[in-house]
Length: 239
Picture (cartoon, helix red, strand yellow):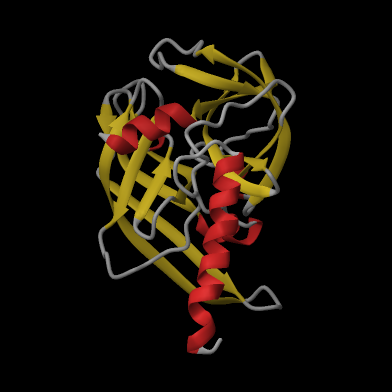
């Protein structure tokens, strides 16, 4: 790590990254996420102040992940339901020791930045911007999943702790849910209550990237799950 070698090392590193970018058809390099980073970046979201179908107060527990040190991505219905946007959003972060004893327990407050109800996507931001969280990387926008591609999601189903579940890509299909009108990925990745907002990931050339966002399961078949697309996420981020 001598100063005289720093420039050469950085040039080699950049060449490797740019090479990967060229393989993927990128105009600029994209950095991938490790499984450890995905786990660290995925946090459980608590929302209060929404309303159920009868207009009664409703709260929700969902999944989501940081996509920058301060920006948090989750499902739209996790922050707004039945036409009412939640009034409070917080993350519950717990660290444990080797004996699973709680060492620290922290609550982070977030603010809603963007909401796309048609594609069931929301972006929130930490209110305390001095906090910097590990984050996942979105796949290059040129990425197009193919039938049978292996995929997985990470989230908090039924408060069982963080869980990774695996499945395959099926198709890009219009949502069957009346109030969610966008195009979604149809997959066989298992989802359960609490998974909403968790990232969908693909292994691209040996590296992991976020390619979608958990939204809902088919009412008559829990083995069919629906995820917001990479294109929809990218468009909301650019607004």
